[in-house]
Image (cartoon, rainbow, N blue to C red; front, side, top):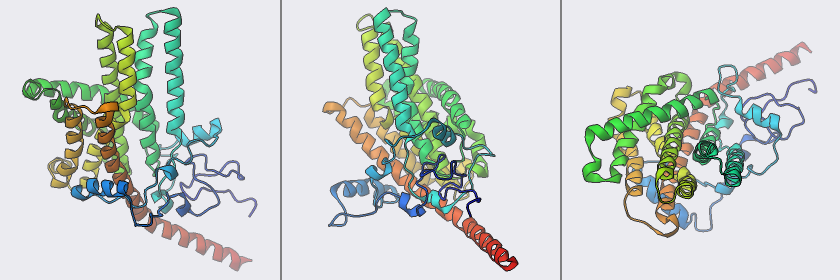
Length: 392
């Protein structure tokens, strides 16, 4: 037994070193049952809470699953644990044909993401260093770097969160990078064409962006991600990740554009640019990334029913879910405001209730898909063990 390699029960990756307490690829705790990795399902004394009731009011009209025992503290309980650099490299090196782990039912348990926080800290440190450099030397050559790093810092960290929520670990960083950069550029192009063709802004004002940009981002994903129609990327969790990638590119490029626009204004200048980057960075997780993730997942859920793509985008189940990001974006762009960005935070809460409900459904999909294959594997392993005993 001592010479046998040790494998993670959650993702199937080989464990190195064998005495490790956590999987270097998926971060799961080793040596315990897979069910331990799920957030607590313990309910309060009255079987729920005001927050749960509010979440139900969001999911029920949309026909989505209620969040069952969802625990934010359990979900993010691994964020502050020490990780070695090689552990982080192995964690990210998944998604290729050779590095996608075997599908197991344990992948249907709630993950415990941690890399997103390290990404955020790293990006903010880089931004802070650039900001100090500019203030110290007043060199305008630093400004483009300030805009780029500041605009991408929070969106990129949010995207890593969606990467970690994709428990099948079947999407590579290369695929994600393609959708962030090219997806952001193409969605800008399509949206600007739609603005010109529809002229919605002339009579709707800023809320017109809800119809134009959400359509443009989703159209971009469906055009670019032809590879995503392969059976390999059929999980709804994959759709969430692909949508988040396009939304990340759009959000970062848009923030960079606003920052540059304010930089050129006579009043404010660099100070106004920094304010724009800061405010849009703080609010970035609640906007385009979550919205496009929901829209993309809506397509994946309908496609899972066997509906062709051309019919999926007019299917009632798609339209009901696609209405969520459109409505959130529409209200976001209205002139109505609440103190301390209360409106944006409330809209973000609604958006992430929908996102986590979709994640929960996606995890059940993974469990249902993996279970037959896992049973066959366990039966084969049992047969092999019996034959070994017989030989002895």
